[in-house]
Every structure is written in structure tokens, then in C-alpha cells.
Image (tube, rainbow, N blue to C red; front, side, top):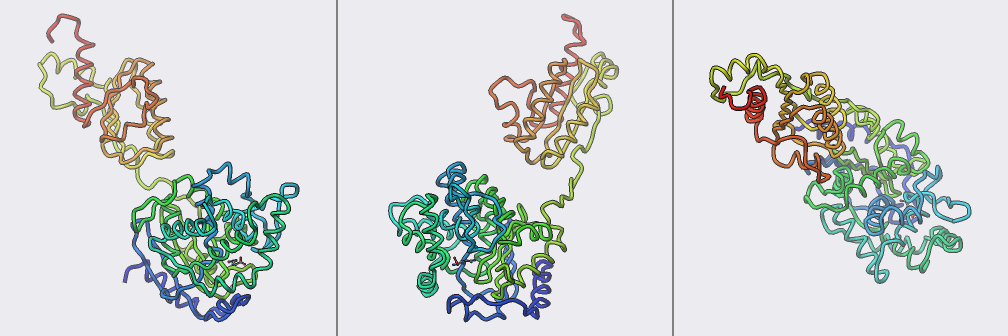
Length: 457
Ligand code: GLN
């Protein structure tokens, strides 16, 4: 058995005996849930699934829908308009609290009912059916399969939903909710009644963790900036009035729901979901909270824990004196290169250039810069990706070196250099397809500058 499944099964089996918590009982469909049901699913960034326990049980998504509908509203309206209508502050209160900003009536956060009802109302649509269809289509794209509605849950939600209706009327009175209250609340109830299995929730969570791309289908569901915002709001507001304690102990963006669903996202690693109906007093699934606390500790997943660089960035610093090119040279040229070859410095780097790696590379560049005028060969052949901010840092450093009188040759694979110097100005460096070509070119340039015009070397 693979070690990921083995960990999940071990946690599942051990926590199955945990019988604390109460199953939600405000509607019969939730009250009749088996408190023993306990399933775990994890979906990696390569789209692989790992399952443990009861993973075939369908259940209504309830509040776990909230971050996804928030992401939909952000995609449709943009962050400024959404922020005008719903805040992003943890209310520190229960999911059905009346937490409205004094004066504007703007709900505090989109992860509890008041803010979620406004968020649902923001989804642009021709009519209520169309609005719900867009929500269903969006959640289905997150899950990677068409999701349907549990009509019994929906009817019960409508029958018992007076507190949500009251919240909506209050917000309409305060001016923060526009449109028909009954229709809006019904759309919200339908959204909560969408039927999922725990593996669907894991794919949905993995899509947020993957910057908005569903790792199973490969489809982009929302823009990366939208996924980042949804994760940020989950991190501060996703766990009702225990959000602070959760961030402290587990350190992952998460969202729970009243049917016992819980998702957590480990950015660029995986999405995980738990289904276990018994809830603690804050409304979070008891086994889910313990399972994720343990997983986070075991695998070092806390957002604030960053293990740092995984591999050396600068792998080699040499000069053309130690490692000349293989280009044929006359005895006179060879003599010049033996005397002057140290003025060509070759720096090799590898891996992904994010801030930390780029800072390391730029430090090496400063440390080994030859006396001006010199030649700098940057061999980035084994660099696989460069972050936009890193390209800007490198660009600025290369401009400084060029203005100090150096000539710069960069070897890299095709698209890597595109973001460097993308402001349209001519770049102060020459691109090459290999480090060997870049060194040979630098030698040619050195020889040309060393040889008095007309002499043949
Ligand atoms: N349908 C439920 C409600 O609005 C969802 C709440 C939840 O999952 N916490 O009351």
C-alpha cells in the first residue's frame, strides 16, 4: 500500500472510536445521518486520489459550498465590487450569527450565512434558475463531474430556514442585500443542498490549492488570483468562531459544513476532505478537526512553516581560464585567453527561481563579478521556471552590470527569458542556447577587445 493511503487509513481507524460531537438535527435528512460514517479523501496536484473509510456516502455540501460561490462571485464581478458588498473579516461568531457592519449593514465575511447569502445574490444571472445553474455548473467544474441537488434536503431547508430568511430581510432593510429575499434565500438553500461525496470535496479543495486549475480534469476553473483570495478568506474565516485556533494549530485554509464535510487546502500540495457528521460546539466535524490537526503536524503542512530551499541554486562558478570553450584558437589567441580568461566569469544555476533562490543567485553575481570591463556568462540551462518578481530582480541587476561596462551572455531554454526586460527596451544581454556557445562568444568578444584593430592575432 502507498504511504499516503497508509497514513490516512491509520488515522481513520484510530479516530473511528472518537464518538464526541452531535449530528446536526435541524432537518430530518441531517438528523438521520449515521454518526459512525467517516471518510477521508486526498487529491494531489497530479490529480491522484487517496481514499480511506466511507467514501461512497453522498451528503449535502452545505457551508462547504461557500468558498466556491465566493470564488464564482469574484470571477464574475472582480475583487473591488465583491469587497464593496461583503467583508473579509472573521466575525468570531457562529455560522448563523447576525454579524453586520454598523452603518452599511455589510456582512462581515462570506464564510458564514449572512455573507454567504449576499455572495449568492451577487452571481450575475438572468433569473433565479439561471443563477442557480451557474452556481451548480461552477461547483461541478471544481469537482470535475456534474453535481446534482438533494431535493429532500432542499425542501427541508426551505421549510425550516426562517433564521436565514430573517437574516436576509435584515440585510435588505440595511441596504446590503438587493433583490427578492425569498428567491435569494431559496438559491442559497439549493446551493447548500448540492450533493457530493467526500472525494468530490477533495477535488474541489485541490483545485483551489492548485491555483484554480482542476488537477484531475486539467481545466482552469477560476483565475489564480481568485483562488488565492478564496484560500485567504478560508484561512481567516473558514472555521466559524474557532478560525483563529485552527490557523494556530493546523495552519491550512479550510471550510466546514453542518452535514459533517470539511475541506482543507495545502497550496501547491493537495486538497483534502473529511466526511464525519458529528459536530463540535462550533459546528466543525469532530473527527475532521483531529484528523487534519494530526496530518498537518505529521507532514509539516502549517502555512507558516516553510522548510526553505530544497536544493542549491548556484551549482558552479568558474572562469574561461579554468574552463575555456572548445572553439579552435590560434597560438596568439590562446596566449591572450591564458592571460585574460579570468575576466570571463561563468555562473551556473538550477531549479525554480523564486525570491529566495534569485536572491542567492544575485548575491553570487555580485560576489564573483570580474573587474570592469568583464564578461559574465549566466548558464540558466537547468533553470526550469522563473517567477515574475524574480525576473524583475534579475533584470535590474543585469542592467546595473551592463552600465558598469560588463558584457553579459545568458544561456537558457526558450521561454525562460521572456519576462526579463519585457518593458520593450533593448536588453543589455545576449541570449544563447547553451552555456558552451555563451562562453565561446565571450571569448570572441574578449579577443576582439584585446586585439588592436588590424592585427590578426
Ligand atoms: N444550510 C445551512 C444553513 O444555512 C448550512 C449551514 C452550515 O453548513 N453551517 O443553515
